[in-house]
Amino acid sequence: MALIPCPTCSSTLRVPDGITAQVRCPGCKTVFEAAAPPVARPAVTAKVVRPADDPPRSSSKIRRRDDDYDDPPRPSGKSRRRDDDYDDEPPRSSSRVRRRDDDDDDYDDRPRRRRRDDDDDYDDDYGDRRDDPVRGEFARGRLGALLLAISFWLYLSTLSVQALFIVLVWGGVQMSTNLPVLPGVLGLANWLIAGVGLGFCCAGPTKYSARGLAIAAAAVAGVHFLFTVIIASEGRGGFDLFGGDGPAFATKKFAWEALGSQLSSFEGAISWIIYGQGGRRGGHVLAVIAGTVEVARFVLVVLALKAMSRAAKGYDGVEKSQMALTAVLVTVGLCMLLYTIVGVVIHEAKFTRTLWNIVFGLLALGATCQALAMILPGMAGHAAAAGLGRKAR
Image (cartoon, rainbow, N blue to C red):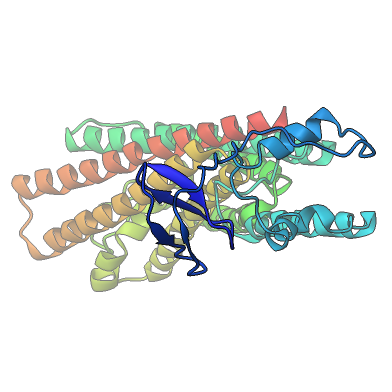
């Protein structure tokens, strides 16, 4: 095939070799002879002849023009402007930058302020401050919790001795009238150590109402001690709780065993309400009130230990305090049921040896449950003291 140019529009036509006929240009419709000499198409890379007065251009520009056909299409000016919008934006003033940074800090601080106000164990950062007053509060709280733990162990010893006395009476052992002094001495030591411990707890941490609970527990303990001393001075022991015809553990000038605990009076309240009689009704009322106050004192003391453990982030103490509170309340309810059954059996059934065994067996079971229930409060006191000690360092 041969290439011939159109004489009018310079278009190039492709025709067979050796043709002599006339051809028509498809662009301008001009008819001309096809025998014209073929014209070679100049190559794209042909060197451009420049006038003599045209200064030579730099090689980089020549290379750029030579490579124009190889380059991909360049983006339009509008798209380049859109891409450069961020580069052309005037710099912000330093005050505006600082203000926006402060806004970000405020946003980060808001959740932390909400967590401080929220009553959450794990998010609260109370006690992380290392100033001396806070360390002093935790140190005093630790000492108070440790003394309360010791008082709980003495409480357990007192209830264990009382349970032992019931077993001895059940077995027909003749006990000396001076033997009940032992639980009284243990109970008095329990009172003194617990009172000092509550005093230190009153000066301990204030978070989660720990100080308020300690003050309430100290006030209730004072009322309980007053009632207990009055009962002991009347010569009535802690087991005279089933009415005028019930078994009296001791009736003498001063009943030391009454200083140990009045829980049995509270737990036998239902039986006393049903069968209580005689001129000693006032003494029974005081004993039931003393037993009720003793339960309230115990609840407040355990709640104070739990609150101090929360303030110190001692979650082991919190868990053990909750377990102790649950265990003791369940034990008190169980003993109330047992003592009610004992009261009904004493007053409704005919007295026999079998009845004697049933009564003292239930009394021994209840006293033993009371003693065992004091194990968890003692452990809770030690756990609270450990948590408070870590914050006091």
